[in-house]
Length: 334
Image (tube, rainbow, N blue to C red; front, side, top):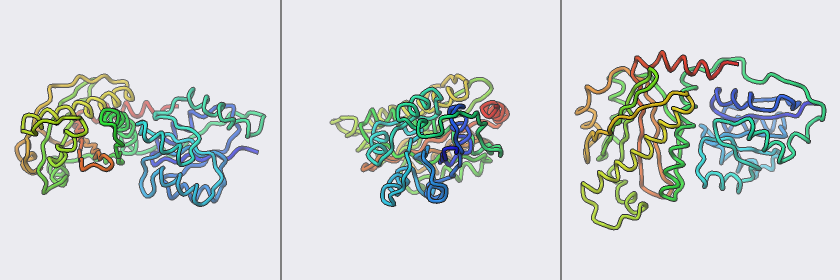
């Protein structure tokens, strides 16, 4: 009898990639859950022996799933598979009962090591059958872009977490193709009534180009300075330096993460300050000519127990969409 295995991730692409990474000689029956609530229901319905669990999901995240498994005394071995690779995330999931943690994108060799180390495969039937795993329905482009951004976002969050020695709260990336007026409205919706500072940095490579836009709420500067051990007076020059430091970390890391997944090196332009201490609407108005129709990926970072709010938007040009479609189609090839 095949061993029941459950893969829980809100991304069809991630579920497909993880299923492909499982050992071919493991006699298993794989089921899928699309979010945390779905995961708990599937555990009760099919009683999986092994659960591969994402952390950043709608409705109920991975931490809440682990807590529910403990509270409801559900018998399942859980391996967390996440793009959130900061040390505190690893520690938290282990404290909540996960048996191990593997980073996205999933490495088949590392996954095999974890399965062997914990004796997971030995609990299955000894005889091996080769199974072709994966979902039949192709994921939509939005789902693919979201998953790629999710992995890159996790790498950027990890760098920020290590630098500031904090726990960075990672959201689900918001992905849309927007016309210029829709983009303006999306930008204006970010802390519309708050004073904000912004930096923009262009990037280009392999037929893909765009800009990374970082918006930092001005109320964040004091706590960022404290976390970075700056004791001097907070004047406009110092705040600009802090803004550039944060933008270099997040923009650089997320573009590196995208570059590795798409196998497409990016060259980065010099960062441009869009404005300091002004409303988002003013930043939008002053830079209206910079953006046209675009693929927009929005990521809102937060830091636990600190009043720090930072929004990062990746704005790809319309001409880049064809190349991006080609690249992500290659990721899904068998």
